[in-house]
Image 1 (tube, one colour):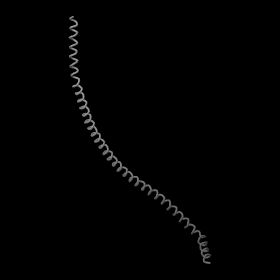
Image 2 (spheres, rainbow, N blue to C red):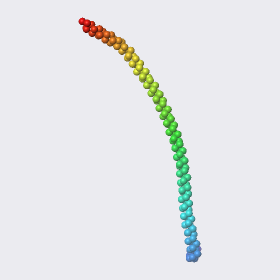
Image 3 (tube, helix red, strand yellow):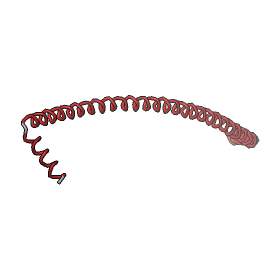
Image 4 (tube, rainbow, N blue to C red):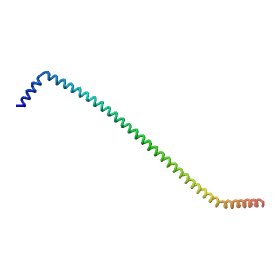
Length: 135
């Protein structure tokens, strides 16, 4: 029974032309509000996107600076290591040259007497040639 009374009241209200106008205006306003809300959401999304972009750029720049400082440190370490290796190579080269010079000096010392003997033998050969010519 209460249900039927509610139904009759709804029918009477919905039948009036004024109610239809109010409903149409309410829907029109609702549509306008929804379109404005979409525009605001898009604007908010753009603003948020710009903020995120700026934030990411700041992070990127700080990482680039950090990377540059790390690269500089590594380059400095490589240069230092290269200098140390160069010093070691020079020292080893000096040792090798000193050994080679000492071995050469030893070899030269042992070959001197043989050269002296050869010199004597060449003198002897010249004498024999001269004596052979005289005869």
